Amino acid sequence: MYDELSVKCSSLITLVMQNQAEKVIDLLESGIIDTRILNDIGCCESPLPLYKLSLCNEILLDDDNWSESFLPIVECNRKGCKALLDYWKRRWNCPVDRPVNFFDYQDVCTYFRDWDMDEVLDGDMNELVALGYDKDEVEFCYAVLTYKPDLIQKHIALRTNPDVYISGDVPPGAGSATDGECYNALVFCNTVYCDAFDCYNLAAFWENAQIRHAEVCDVHLLVEAAAYRDLENKLRRLL
Image (cartoon, rainbow, N blue to C red; front, side, top):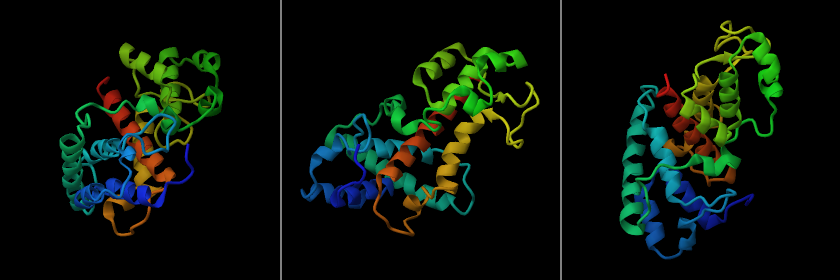
């Protein structure tokens, strides 16, 4: 995994993250960019094609629950994102109609990397079940917090309830979003992508108010935010 992006690649990636369709197209058609970047931008363990950054933006932009002052920026970026997706498909035959399999990017999407259940939920499975929690709901919550593909797929198939507050310090049914003790898989998904904008300034790429070159950490933030937004949509369909 690269620690930094080359200047030319960083400029192109920045423009894609900003949904600057005309500038992206001009830069790629100029011939000064190595088009191998289309197949892999080189910052994840699995190949991450450039067009998938636009798919990540599309997932995040497909939401009207933004502040009223930010909605004009969202609308502008939606247009640019759509123009880019059309370009990726028309010019480079990219499969933009195929959903991103974020499980391929577990190394980027995992929020609580290498955390054990008792570290995250203040209790291991036996302790949490002894308190009265449902085993499947505990496992599902832990899977979402640590982004474990096999367990997430298992519980989506089982239609396990994701809207449960869980903690070894709080009895079942007593937790809430504001107690600072519990985790809820559905709420956590929302928190991750909202924090990407509110705390880590992912919004700067849409606002274009401060032009900066994308770093590897910015790409990872975009992918993680889109992954958890996508997962939230899937979890809501279980309710």
